[in-house]
Image 1: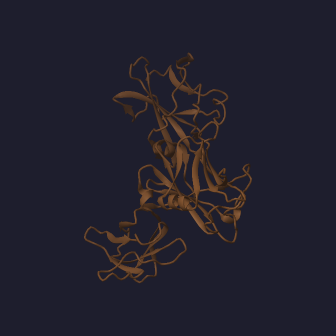
Image 2 (image 1 turned 90 degrees about the vertical axis):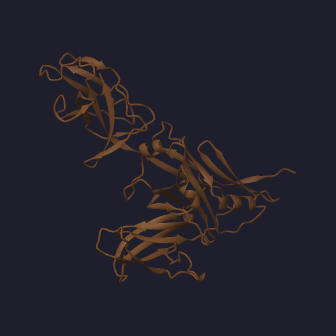
Length: 377
């Protein structure tokens, strides 16, 4: 007898940074609870290229599930990367809030917006979670105020207050706790929810009268989410009202936008073969008329300061600084035909200037994201 498996859902990972749009570095991995659920439900998790697929074993009618888990089911996957530095350098992650180091990405579907058309999958956009913790942790914070006493509360994803531990007698702690600032001007509260579900929680700090919110953070509490290489989580949810659990195959997509940054070339006169102080000559960076082809466009590279720069030297050598007039997209294929030229002779000093390395350190300058490229001549 042949065993038949039907596809429950398929989730693709796309990224504008790659020339074919297919992400090559991100991997989805089910968490421990989901692994158990899949095993108990006679379901399989597979990856095929940039697609993550869940299959369920069909009954004798080849359509209904061999084991029915019901309509209300949640599956959680860790979004991981072995090259997280490259991912962060090439990916636009800002939402309504600015991404900062330590944030986690959170994706979830809308069960009422499921798509059974592979050509128009439901696109799952991310929210930024402030921090991630294990289920036992100490929440430490300080305030830019003079408050010495505060109140601590934590709510689950449904907005319900939860107790964050037990007292010496084994009783649940109150859902509102009083905190006192210590000698280092910090507040601390141990949180132990090892007997509760992992997931998204909100921590709220108010003044002693519980009338003014002083601090609020959305946190992901999940032991696996704090492991190295875990960028965030993806929740796929099914519920009774929509009844999609064992219906037509559902199609989802994670879609990442490429990051844009200004390029700053620092041309270092290491050989001192060019007299940068000679007013009769000057360096220039010229882009090709086509900008190197899509998604690039032609940009100007403007001289910053004078030649050489009055305040910047690299390893003691005179340096000339150029900055692109527009932000340039991060892209797998390099921007070609950006050349360093000596004027007025139009002598090409460097035919093809390097693009910023994919793992280059980024800087923010006056609100502009900049990537530096050093050119030694």
